Each structure stands twice: as structure tokens, then as C-alpha cells.
Image 1 (cartoon, rainbow, N blue to C red):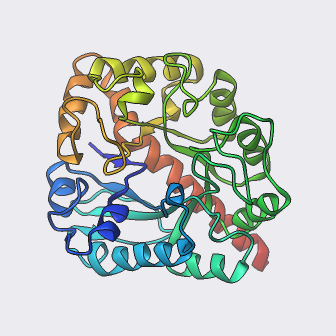
Image 2: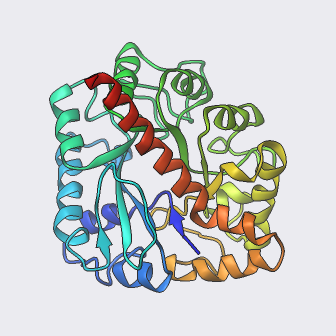
Amino acid sequence: MYIADGHCDALLQLWSDDEKTFAEGPTVSADSLQNGEVNAQVFAIFAPVYERRDDDFSIILRQVDAFHEKVKTNAQIEHKPAEELTDGTKTRAILALEGADAIGDDWMKWRLLKRLGVESVGLTWNEGNSLAAGCFEQNGNGLTNKGRAVVEWLKGEGMILDGAHLNEASFYESIERCGTFFVSHANVRGVHDHVRNLTDEQLKLIKKKEGLLGMTFFTSFINGTSEAGFADLARHIDYVAGLIGPEYIGLGSDFDGIPSPVTGLEGPQRLPALIDWLLQRYQEADVKRWAGENFKQFYNQHVQNNKDIMQRGRT
């Protein structure tokens, strides 16, 4: 079964402790990915904006460097930006930026990050910044003029826009303006009313955009407590499948970025246990979709769309 995870913070852990190795260091490691039979893993680059540092871009570059020096060089990993996902025993790594305030509308920095392999971008974390309002801002603000320019640039460069941390105003404008759109790690307000979870209207727009929602394993988003089980996570899956269909659901663990994961989902090595549990309760075709087939189809369609656009531009 193809398994894909739309979000982890292993690079943050490797940057925080330079002595850590990817072989065994963070929760998402070469060993845990191999043991979990993970075919695709999105690695987020995140400068901790809550620390109010003035070297955020340097932190971003150091995490990119950790990816290229520690992750990409591991035998378990393959890194092929903008190429279609295929089955295999290795884990395909996809590089993403979570929060872009340190980049703003500096196009040199954007070009550099794309050349270094960044394929997906979230404009903000929970805060408001120079590009967009994050989900902790409920004052009606959305994208800024700089943010609109960045969204247009990302669309033109064939990069994915991640709406995971946007507030509703930023979300609605971004999904209308962008090219490929997904939400890498969130759950749904129809099950638990948390500001990081999505409304029914947002879910319907993801379907209209042919995007994807990565269900996250953070218990706070699942039921508002520090403990949750497989059944609690499944309630969110049921809700999304019932509202917009099973074709728009994936996984977005947030491993290495959350203090309390679902019990029994402490790392990628435990993903087969979740899949086995789901197989006992749902149709195999749906479980395959949620485990990774939906993500593979979403990503490969994105790659094909961009190839078609570039081909039309050359003719």
C-alpha cells in the first residue's frame, strides 16, 4: 500500500540540535520511515516565529542545508522535485516552506529556495505577517498586496500553496488566486471546533479546487485534549468523506512538531498499525486512498498540469 505523509518537522529538530543525525535522530528518521514503509514524506522548513528572532532567513537556509546534508544523502531517501511519484522501497522527500515572512516579496530569495528544491509554501504560521493573516487573527484581515504578489508568483512557478495555517479570509482569497492548493495538516471544525481546523465551506472549496486535506495527528486538533485514539481521528475522516468524498483525504501527521500525537501513532513506524485498524472498518479502496493514493494522485496531477502549462508556453 502506498503511504504518504503531508507534513513533518524533522528539519526543525535537526536544526535545533546539530548533533542529531537523520539516521536515528528525530521522530521522522530514516529508520522510522523505512519501518513504516512510507513512500512519500513532506519535510517542512520552519523558522520559529514565536521566538521573535531577526535571523529567520538564516534559519530557513540552515534547515535547507540540513535537508541536503543529512536527509537527502541518506540511502532511504530520494529527492526528485517536480517529478511524478512512483512506487518503490525508498521514501520520496518533498521540501516545503512553513511560513514565509522572512522571504516577503524578495524574489531573489524565492528563486533561491525554488532552486534548492522547495515545492510547497505556506504563507504564514498562526500569526499575521507581511503576506497574510494566520488563523490566530480573526479580525477580518486576509492577504496583503505583497501576499497577492507572492501567490501569483508561486502559481507562475508551478509551486503548491499550503493553506494549513491561514485564517478564513486569507484561505478564501488564496484558494481563488493560486494554482495548486492543499492543506497539509489540519482537521475539521464539524467534529472539534478549533481555530486550526477547517469549516464546511473550506472543505467544499478544497473539493472544487481538486485539492487535498492531510488529517493531522495532534490530539488538540482532534478532540481538544492531550489524548486521542484511532477512533477519534476516524471521526474526522468520516466527516470529510461524508461531506466532500473520500477522494480528498490524506495524512498530515505533524510528527516532530506536536507534543501529543494520537496514541499508537508515535512515529512513521506506527502508520501500518493505523492502516490495519482502518482496514478492519472501511473499504480497502478508501483506506488505500487515505494512506497515500490520494496524495500521489494529487501531486502527480500537479506535476502534469505544470508540464502542460510549460509546453503551451513553448509553442
